[in-house]
Image (cartoon, rainbow, N blue to C red; front, side, top):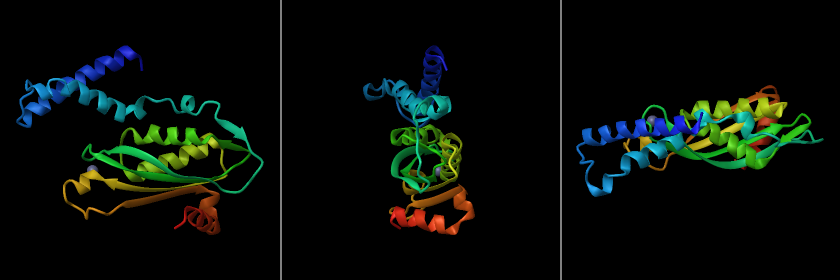
Length: 192
Ligand SMILES: [Zn+2]
């Protein structure tokens, strides 16, 4: 999306945030809040920038030839996302294992790929599945397995769940779906 559209969208969002702040009972003319609508709009736009990212451009030229056929692990990629039910943060880490089929992907690109899906309104289950299928598609892997652990502020801040709990999700495709021994190998490499 063009920069001019982005700026226009951010301005429109800021107008709505100003209304929300008023409805919450605050005074938008108070000095500390004067620039809050535009700052908040910019932050929200950034935190949802995954909608406007081009994945193929993000991972462009980051594939390398690789002879091996054993699991490649990328562990504990930190991510920050927003739950689609409350628009509150959830965050944690994602670990990805894949069986290459002649190609591997640069490590920093894997983290950027995670961000493309994390920076949206999400549910953890879908984030996990999307990362799994996108690594399969881009790397052309024989199999992919993804485990995600996260803290959800919509649960913690609203006191619905015990403060120290985390939510775990998992997905796998290809060789990992066919062979339980591979899933066990993944979990062993993950150290759980
Ligand atoms: Zn939520």
